[in-house]
Length: 404
Image (spheres, rainbow, N blue to C red):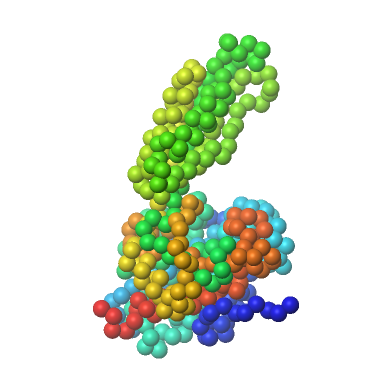
């Protein structure tokens, strides 16, 4: 079988592609969960220091920031990659599959890290070429997967220590052609909140239900009533998701338990819809429980906000891709995504853009089409040099000598 045609990339980055792939596969084989990325951040910090970056460690616990000043220009840019893995048992069968049972790079953060390191190497090699004038901050972030590592880095003073005119981040996207880039201004990824509803009843014998208040029945009614939130409360042209992902109640068939617990995932693409969902979920849980003589306690955790891309930064980033790859290199009419991303915290405090790069469409080994968070997923190494080259072109475009 013929090898696939290489994707577009800068020749200088292609020359070191084997090293970038080796780094990616090393990280993949040794996955670390959020705030535990000790070996990964050691690897990142060592490479950045080797290439001449000023390295700052400790933001967000295991975060690493590499800074490179090129020329004397006042412009600054930040590029972010996430480093953490997921608690999943890998089934990909790859030679570089996880060596740690129950932990896996199932979202491609290994590829994001290796991609940014490949770009870092090239930028450092070109620092005295005159092609750049300004400062680049490379942000290697821990704990994106639900733990809010971006928020922790910001709380630890990232933007005070490393002010950025614009910040950018990238995620691989299975189902799109490998190496094709996607952009969308405005709301691009959904908020992600979690609610735990505890229904308090009165336990009793299953043979005499009239002497008890059954929290299971009340919980079942709550589940059904919650289906009306999106159908009847959210405007039809807006997006909302209310998913009951877990129900826990009781241990025996002849015992009416004291409590029942529901766990929900709640998402929106507009801040006002996000607030509406919280209001209606709480109201429905409490009133439905009361109908059955029970009581509902709602613990609502607002986690990741809606990710909103700055219009100017998105247009700039998109044009960089078009100037390099042409219109065919950009996903036409990129739609919002109902997944969430903690880069949203960066975009609440700084202007910037979150973009995607196609990981591949096919489902065979190495073709990149397997969806993320799947035990069979693997990052498509063919995309590494293309993504790294895009980062270099974006930095070069923003830090262009003579830019106002």
